Length: 301
Image (cartoon, rainbow, N blue to C red; front, side, top):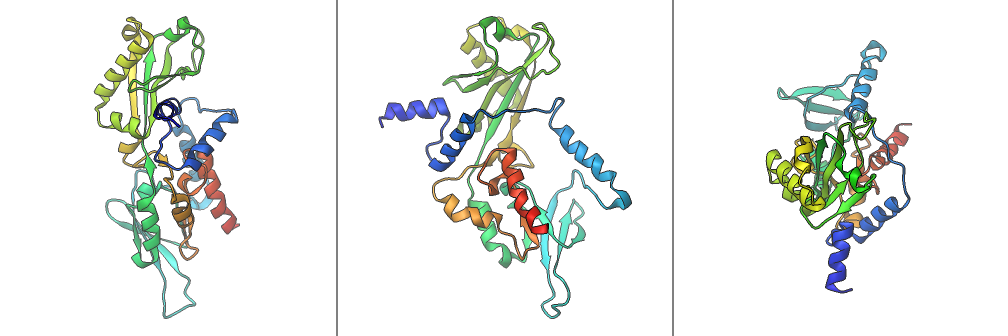
């Protein structure tokens, strides 16, 4: 394959040539299945808020959720001198290092976040730490602009996306303003949704710089001078700078599926379990997180 052909594929399909070919094939297959996408009107946080409300409604306080609380340590405890005492887990949480006792624990953070947790005794988690440390994570950045009206419809653009070699790379024209009833209602689009090295560029800029540069690219792409006057607001999300995720999603490099996959999902003493999209074969998708959770649910069934 010529250098030009390789560059074309990389540009048009946003393919990272250093990552696993199998990962790229899986991603392509998923997208060619023409799946139906859904969104939660008002924001995805409504789902987690509903979980919290339902938890609080469980009788006798049998369900508790600690919000805005970091997990600092997961300590496996057993008594080697008395096998009749069942092993348990001590969870260390919060700024005051509060400890809570559990029969078992499911770690459902990203692999990057899990690597920051103190797992003890360390000797039990050596291979787990290695897998969490070595697993390749990609970055992702979303830049959204809201406009007083959907200017792109005047260009006969109804949904879909544009591809460019400008830094914004991909523009998605779905109107994310789900309350819009006419062309004169406000409209939101993803001015840019990028991954990997394309996302690293934006993560190094401030929100103001990102909003301005992406708007300049959008104006250049459409060759229209009136776009700036239609801007209402701008929001930016960088997953690599997110204090909870520490990255967007797992993406195997060559040999990582063989060398790391099983270790990432392996439970410790059948008491400390791990789930997440990085443990499944469907990286980047909520479906992957659900699939990985099924393994643990089957264990407890």
